[in-house]
Amino acid sequence: MKGLFLRAQENKMKLEMFYMDDEGSLTQRTIRVLRVSKESILAYCYERKEVRSFKQENILSAGPLRGKVGA
Image (tube, rainbow, N blue to C red):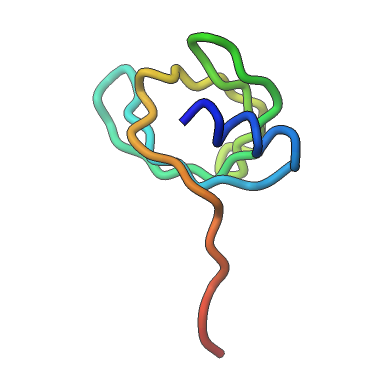
């Protein structure tokens, strides 16, 4: 998954991510990766409208943001 985050950072792609916070709550976030470190991802979170740090161990899944289909 680290490769996905590095590519997203390089290409300034938006990602959709499912994340479990420290209290065990599941959230879905749309992010733009700013920096990848060994233990965390620094990203702009579009839901919170601010830069946030996400622990890599709490990221359940992530992938490119899918566009809406249909009219």
